[in-house]
Length: 108
Image (cartoon, rainbow, N blue to C red; front, side):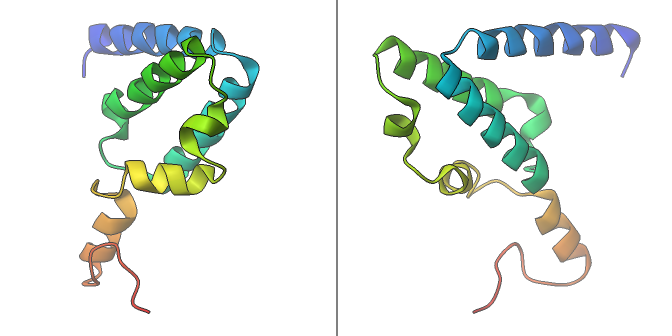
């Protein structure tokens, strides 16, 4: 990764955060919780930015339609996030595979 890639990445991230700040306050709060959750869970493709920007797109459309954020995602933010990444490998999945475990599912 060269210096130009780093600068471009920063520019894109600043534009992304500006879009988040333009959302209504309740949307911003929920977005930050989603972001925190996804950063902890660690879907492998999170750094490419499509998931987070897709959430902002979804939120912008909901806000423009006059809907509350919980009308869009439901009351359980974690369940919403889990549903978004259910088919995406996470760093936890990779780690578990490296230990010889099953891929991402706990046995019950």
